[in-house]
Image (cartoon, rainbow, N blue to C red):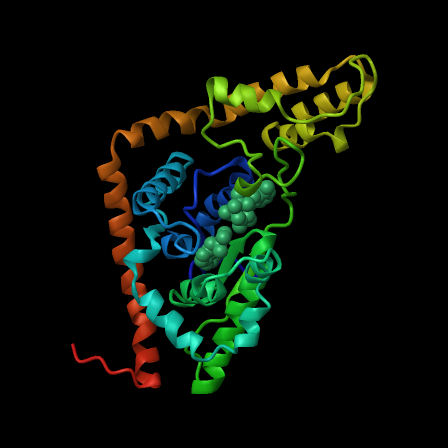
Length: 331
Ligand code: ADP
Ligand code: TRP
């Protein structure tokens, strides 16, 4: 993979299904921010995808704005990338339809999110069943080469590659770029308060913008074992240390590791240390977020400008696709 060329198109999306947590930050958002300097980056808020699980217009609108504010507060520079809402490029649903006509039902039946629902005895909706096709359209409609995502998205990216290939084979041309997944490997799964993967669905999360009493309460409730204060402790099996490693500079993390191994350092100490590290890490972003919350019109303008840019790019990719598939456009 060569990410140094400016011609590289990078794309990723984040679903606005609630406030963002620290797992989302280290597992996805931070990589998105890092990738901006490596090419022409397109980042969007996947509000059509959110509809597969959220049916409350007021909340979806609010979450979409919240995600935009969070990204901007965390340092996304809208001058250096195209940042937009998925729904501002309605052509993406058109491409999803076209790809769906080439997609075997059996390919969707292998989808993990869909299979999970079925295994739980729930009735999945068609939107969830065909979720990977819309995701493929998201990726392919901008000619994306590189898609930075967490390991949980691997299957969806394989499906995107598969559908692009099927389209190109069927219509005999290089209409769609075959995207490369960039799976973030160096970030372990971020543990939640109970030690399981941090996730909204386990209610074990710490929001990126938790602060004050809320943050303290959550950090103090992180589960630890019962090793006595004076005894040595194993940093590598400790949920608090796993989080410390994400926030601390290497030297600081090494120092805390030593303290664990030596004994006489309690989990209460480690939690206070973590709290201080988190406060310091997110302080500038919290400040920016407060400003943005008082200026939501500006945030909507940023999304609107990004949407126009993204839509222009999408139209250039759709033109030959309509042509070759015979979809008539009279104006
Ligand atoms: P949730 O599990 O809270 O519903 P999502 O599935 O919406 O989170 O996650 C969005 C992205 O954030 C995912 O693609 C994943 O890569 C990343 N992510 C979520 N939780 C974690 C975690 N605990 N550790 C690392 N990455 C995570
Ligand atoms: N499915 C992704 C997630 O849950 C969000 C998403 C939608 C996405 N479309 C995308 C990610 C296209 C990358 C590329 O995190």
